[in-house]
Picture 1: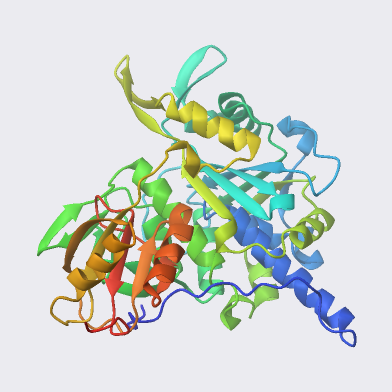
Picture 2: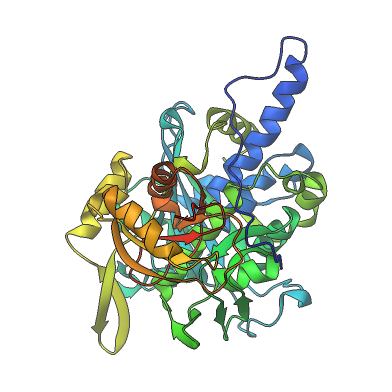
Length: 444
């Protein structure tokens, strides 16, 4: 675990060409390789899908990945060209089969369940990817019987494809399924991922534990965070439950995805690429229509994708009880607005008309620092809901922390302040963005 709180997550480098005139061939190969990795990370939208896309990057591995005939999944007809939108169903399976001992104990349940359900839509012309998480307890009706949507996975991949497609009213063109061990292994293969935490955090059930600041999570830690449903933060000396639910968990999974995406340009992200692909053949299942050529071409279409091109959302739901069973059902009319936006490829966050709430924390130890920056933000029109001390006072650089779908707002705050860096991480309750003021901030 890293102890360098001043080090923020870095942004992926971008480009719009393929090298110089004298290195066209070498440059092309570099872009294809980066594109494959970048697309797969983006496609990992549940954190688990990332591994599947990565797999498709090398001929030596393509043949060994477990596949399901597309004809058996009742998938929608694929778009005529790769420049048109296409939708992936990403399933994170909780199968314990072949789970390495170093990942710890996650129970001895047999079989597998759809622990994560996400729809990923690729919009090549807009250079964007949309990720919509569907809570696993969402009520659906399958063959005349009510059940939780993850229960459809018991009937096999074709059943969950049908249930999700009918529920969301969207065509599904491809299927990706990854297990626990696959996700942890991919995180370790990229050298861990950096995330920012405003408070020390833990989950006693999933065995997640981290200190405040920017931390590097290894595979087991990232998996524990992805599975956390009893998430707590140490605030004012007390452990407080924060978003300790399935809904909170889907949001943390999205946070993990973008953290991976924004750190792909680190050398450790590419080293051992072939070894990684060969090592993970036990953990990935795809439809056989998602072949290597399709991935390479689609990755090229999406080669300039950056963190700002990720639009993430969890379907708005509310609790619902029926015949002694606890479900969640769509919260209307917001849920219909979100689904309609996803179908149209429109921004998912615009359905809320969100008023951004900003918390400011003193992370440099200088008296009055949080109040000073809070006043500056108020003057610029931001809604500041709190000014307080951070858990630590040794931040060298100001961090503007938010969830993936509001990263553009964090970048606006950085622009208004004239210092600091926007990064993905957790935010305090009641705040959409937290500004942790570092030593780079003006003293008065």
